[in-house]
Image 1 (cartoon, rainbow, N blue to C red):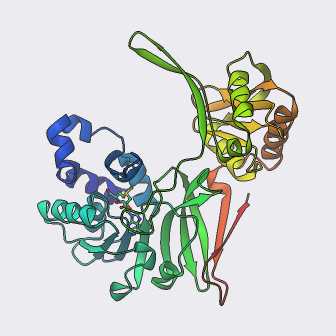
Image 2 (cartoon, protein in one colour):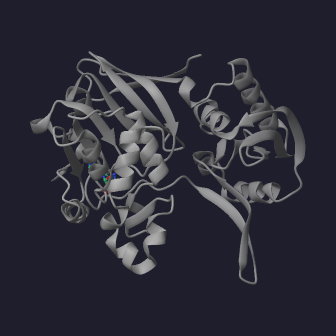
Image 3 (tube, rainbow, N blue to C red):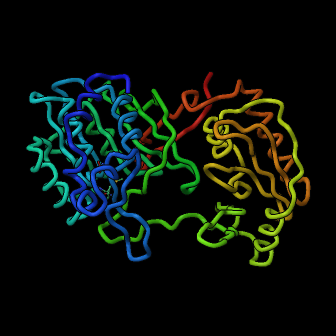
Length: 363
Ligand SMILES: C[S@@+](CC[C@H](N)C(=O)[O-])C[C@H]1O[C@@H](n2cnc3c(N)ncnc32)[C@H](O)[C@@H]1O
């Protein structure tokens, strides 16, 4: 953490007050680990609310460049912890409104905020409509992901204000947390962080979008289990059951290894691939990522150390390997772009209901 106001906020707002049931059940230590803590699920067990990972919250708050006295809108109150941190940073002259869709979650957030005497105001509603009666806002922060940018957020943001949101690309396969500045008719990205958030929902109780298809093999011996292969991605959906099974057996076979001759930072090359690889070929996701061949008879995955990719491991036909090599070469030729090189521009075409999101790589 580099910003003193963000640091002070984390030191003064107790996270346990927003997670009383977890603190009671698992102790204070659990609440002070740098992990997201899920607080509710839908009937299929898919998380619908959580207290986000503290280090990610800190990076997002720093990126938002908050100043005392600012008016802030948060979309997705969850436990209310982030709203309390926001209120601490903008101080007594500032104002924080946090919108939560789910009534029970809104009630728990209100209780948490009251328990620390936070002035942040919790309101219930669909945050995609913003909260016009208290706008315009100097800052808007969204803590659930979205593939589009609702016009209301642009309208309720002051000129020159900042909007930070987890932007979903390619049906959930890629996410980047983008901070935009409002420039009259458009929003232009100023900074990008890596990270993943659960999606915004249409209504309380509405199903959360299912995760992409996945297949895997696990070895369980005595009490220990270990993943032997794990592939996921929309690309698997177009393959027949027999082809998916064959792909899994390929992933369990011995790989051909192609050394890249470089140490590519994992987050940078992963983000590049999720944006540039054809959607019907991309598989994996953190920490593995790669592509399958056109007909599903081949697989190529990036591999290496904890922080870098150093080689391609491939299986079956050579089509996937060629594609992954080409994409990696493209990344090199473009100057090895990372998150901060991603430019995102959002415009709101006249007469159209939605927004137009354009991604490109700057230098
Ligand atoms: C990751 S949690 C937010 C974490 C939270 N900021 C905190 O500090 O605990 C995402 C929240 O967004 C809420 N949400 C989902 N769709 C929404 C919508 N359309 N409008 C407002 N809130 C929404 C969910 O119910 C969930 O509580």
